[in-house]
Length: 194
Length: 292
Image (cartoon, rainbow over all chains, first blue to last red; front, side, top):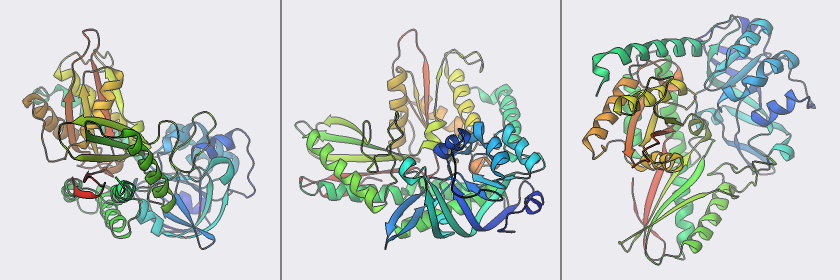
């Protein structure tokens, strides 16, 4: 299904774990350095209200006086777990894209403030870079370097799956619990022994 | 070796943008294993599409072009200093072109060198051999899968894992469980049983130079490799941790002797974007043969 800008609370609350979406609009990249910066009270020259943050450190090259993203898959989100909930609340973010999922603190913030977590396919840097139509701007480039800067990206049909919704459901929790139980069973089977 | 830099640049390009045939074959098998219209199948299809685009365009398969690690075998008397100098030039150029991301960050200041050069980057492992030829293998391993790599010290109370092969198995399956989708599975485990903390990890990673379709020479390691793949694929973690059939593509196990007091199990978790390549060079440094 389509998910188009503006990313309103209503649209986000209408989505559920397992929904595959094609996102069109603006994404802001932000990973380790940006999350720590915002947590420590860092300021931004633009508003993140009703925006989507993308955990991504892209490969960006200079071309014909502009920027071109040549690879842009998601990075592991769990490293932002200490900061994400606070940033969702404080900046009014409506969506977080990354990989590997996030923890209960973020899940709770998603439910409370109407935000969702979307999982893009890790490593699929080319498929996802093709969805980026334009680099609209870059922030904190000098301070953090290319991979850690905030890149403002215009995307069309960027593919991801909702794995944590605004209703308290997380696919990651489900798979973790199921696989942990499965492992317990396996260890007790006679065939486990070599 | 006047052509060395050019050859290494080509090695970096190919490694970053093309997966070896054995990895592609394993991923195709994994794609077929996922049920129709499942999340696992969605992930595997995106992966397949990504492999095709990267190969066609010579762009990085994954934006995290990883820790650049060279494994060199060369005859006695080979000039390692000259090799490193040329290799560093090749790495900086590959970064500028965009085959590699700017991936070398000062751990104290956070400053990104912008060239992939700095203390500890890139990594070189040199070995001498009796042959006359020079062989250069390269692994690009990203941070996501490096972060879920793990080292266990047996006995391990939490896992009820003792100092035997059962204990080793419990460590390996625990590592897969803990990784979930965070290491960009379906993954591959490079494993070393024994050694010390440093050599254990080193040898675990060296196992990733092996092809997916080979098997350990030691019969008990060979059995362990097959068994862990089979067990891990029953956990239901699936591609990207979305749930599904394909959690591991392979296990490559090795062993080193250990001290009586230590028993480490070291695991180097590799993501599906298993970027490994290698070349044999002639006396001028030109590529004579691709190794994978």
